[in-house]
Image (tube, rainbow over all chains, first blue to last red; front, side):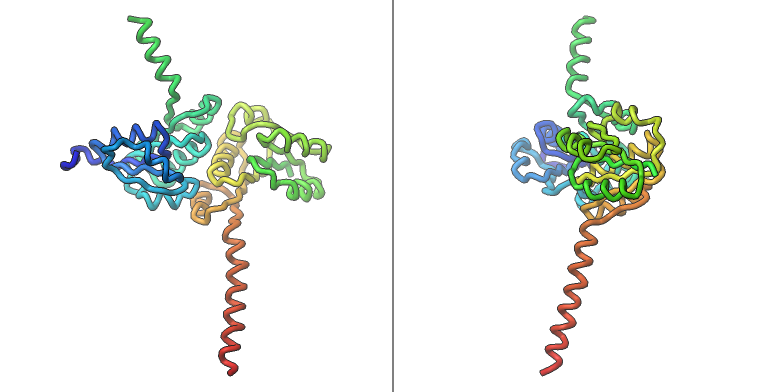
Length: 139
Length: 146
C-alpha cells in the first residue's frame, strides 16, 4: 500500500458517492487516483486506507477538471448522481481533452439512449443484476 | 425563424416575449410542467413541450421540424452543453446559442462548435470593471488635486 504502485494509470473520478468512493478505493491500490466532489463531507465515504487525492470542486466548471490534471489522465469515470452532468463530463473528456478511456454511470435508465447516441460507455446497476441473474439461470 | 428554447429554468419569459413580438416561431422544451402550463396559457402561438431536453425520446418527436436556431437557457453549463450537442447531432440545428455561467467553459463550448455563448459572469464583471476604473480614475484625480 505504501510501496511504488505497479501500474501507474492516472484515473479521475467525478462524484464521491457510494459508487465513486468504492471505485476510488479499489483503483487507488494500483493507480494514481483523484476523486472530485463539490461536497467536502462526501470524502468521508472513502475507505480508511484510501491513498489517492481528493479535490473539492464543482465539475460543472471545466476549470476544475483541468486543475485536477485531466490533460494527463488515462481514464475518467463520471459517477455523479446527475446523468446530464455525467454526459457533459464524458463528452468534454473525449472531445476536448482526448482522454483514452471514458466511462459514465447511468442513474436514470431513460437516458440510456442519449448515452449510446453520443457514444459514451455506460453501465446501470440493473445491467449487473440482469447479467448475474442470466448466468445463474443458464447454470 | 424557427427557434427552439431548451433547458430547465424559468428565465426565458422575456426572450419568448420579444421573439414572438418579432413574429418568430418559438418552441419551448422544459421539464417544469407548471411553468409550461403558465407559458401555454399566456401565449397561444407558442409550442410547448414538457420533458427533459437530454431525453432522446422527446427530441425524436420534434426531429421532423426544421429549426433554424436552438437556445440553451439552463442555469447549469453542463446541461446547456449537452443540449447544444444533442441539437447538433440529433436535430441537425446549425446555430446553437448557450448561456455560460463559468467563464472557463466558454472556450470549451466554442471548441465543440457552439455558435454563440453568452457569458453572464463576463458581462457582469465588465460592468463592475468599468465602474472600478472610473472610481479609480476619480480617486486619482482627487489625490492629484491637493
